[in-house]
Image (cartoon, rainbow, N blue to C red; front, side, top):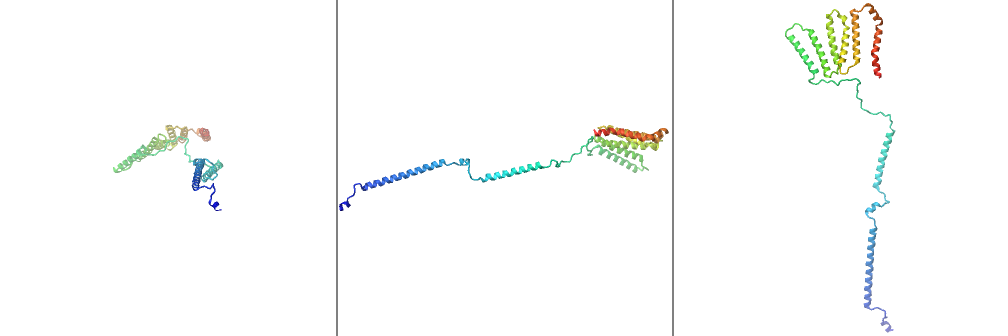
Length: 288
């Protein structure tokens, strides 16, 4: 019994062998651990290589909702709806809606001169002033020199001459377009001349119809001297001259009694026919 207890089996390792086995087991364990770590690092590198980069992530579709894109889409949608609404409103606007347009500038069909403005130093503003100054100086000299009376005929001639000169200067300053100014100058001169001459003739008041002849002559001359000649003025002047001559023959007693009776019977008819003949061209010209 005692021998069996003290004796060891043959396969029992000795102390040195057990130490060697422990070292070999530790080395194998460390080798396995390092191998496993190496495998884990390799697996991580492979996983990292397989993982998508930031550039690939932008290209890959995601299921998450992009808030900025959604907001931009909503803003574009509202702009499109606004444009569509405006187009519909424009299309539904009535075609007969009044359009606001600037006031049209009045243009006359007849030739007309430019606006006349008297500037400093022009003849129409200087010469009449000089004429008035001369008349005033002459009258002052007559009154100071002790003259008993002033020659009113001379004053009238100077006044009429000044008015006629003023109208003539206005006509010349407008480039002969102011036909009315020339007409007034001629009418003033002929009227003053006829009124001054008739009392000195035996005709007296019977020559008053000659005023119409002077006015008709003024119409013809003013129309003939204007840049744009008008035939209506010529016919009007001739008509005035005919009326004046006819009236002068009546008032002067130059017609026999038989002719006077005939004129009294058919005079109105002749005047009406003459008026129609004169106004027919003007009527057809307006319609054309």
